[in-house]
Image (cartoon, rainbow, N blue to C red; front, side, top):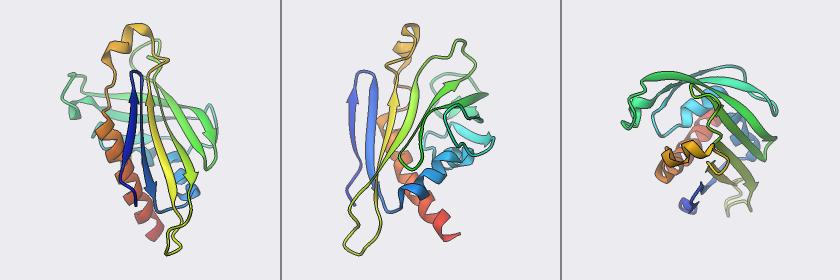
Length: 169
């Protein structure tokens, strides 16, 4: 499989990885609130409550611990994930409603693109993870990026492992 690759602008990070799974299998992890916790490489996502999402406007709660980053002494807190983009098997994107009001305005998401099967016939999907703060409120832009490109790449690796393990259950 190709190695992780990434691109960065002043207000957006994108990383990609080819995952040996179908878009639907990957999307199932991304729609599951606990799936987000399972694949987080930052260490901030501790738990989640809520039902799997099925469309734009759906929400779930993520229980966070900012101490994992060691940058801001926020301790434990909750955020609400609000689904902003939902194209089943293709893209999911969300904003965050947290302790700061109004919400800061950054978004996270994944795009899934089927690729040619591997030589052995294994189905593969190119997964693009993005983190965009171009629509964040101007007074908050100086804090970005909070999550690094390395964190996004790590999460894609954990996603590949998680999808593979869930397929064996």
